[in-house]
Length: 425
Image 1 (cartoon, one colour):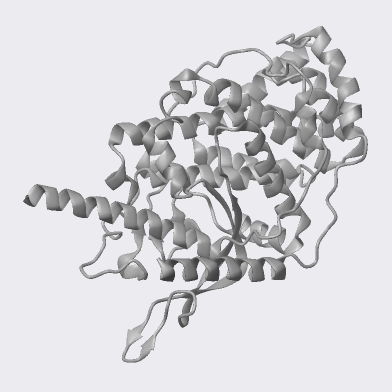
Image 2 (tube, rainbow, N blue to C red):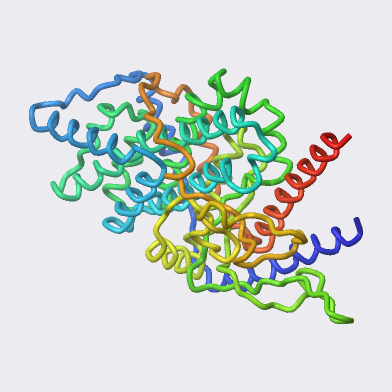
């Protein structure tokens, strides 16, 4: 216990030092004064009018554009890999759309969480039925956000092409009335911070209504021992690999009197550094929004983090395998991720890399299908999220992420050992 406490403190200390190094220089990222009051004035009228569900401006040319964007949205919404790529294409075309890059990076994490369910360790802890249900929830969240957000991003592109606002068409895609004032303001002022926070608030309420509060998930997945157990292992991490930024990996060494103790051992290999945060409660919409704002501030307030994230995103294609960012620790090749006899929890290397499949090898495509209509916007309490925006102080996750993966491994091996003992007895 003492050794674990010391190691935990060393991990936190290393994270703080690395975070302080990457946090310089820092860009001021603030929400303008009075933005909540402005939004209250704009949205009060929207609530009075109610959700229309369809645009009143669908002449022949608009109908054609709407049909084209819908078709494109469904095509890219095939699976997590295609969605993730679509977000990045939008950001390349319009880098002022900060949310598109944030969505790309978070979507990568969604894919990694999906493939973990078929990887080296979770199949030892969870039955296939439970893993399939968890995948269904992750996939639904990923797909619902894309179906709602991608048409908004495309309408901005069409507005740029036409030289005039096309946001009157937002209701034709079922987008909440909450978003139109923010898009119209962005069209005039080009302030990416206000728009990004609005999109974070909107998308989290989209999945709150259709997934988190859906009894099919709320009373089964979110309340299940499997989901709560994953929270205890702190697997609700969102990590951002930083291309070109390395973090020394420490390994345990036992040779005569030369013995390392994890973080204080001899650094033999360097990992791609990881920035990120841990979400404590997925079931709480306010916490998810605060979490999204923190990730956004981390990404765009710290140029070194943004530069590293872009370097990774531009050079490493998304497959869903964790080998995308740590190829020495993970392998996408089934059969090469087996634990070798005598392997200990602290040992890594290509010979004992953990199996992390590509999404295409883990799960078949699952069409989203129809979703319930209706606007989530019923009151203005959500405007509390526009009061502040703070970048996190500690955000380097490299060692914490590795430690979390080792905890998962330890739990899987412990359960496997118990089953073997029970079988022998």
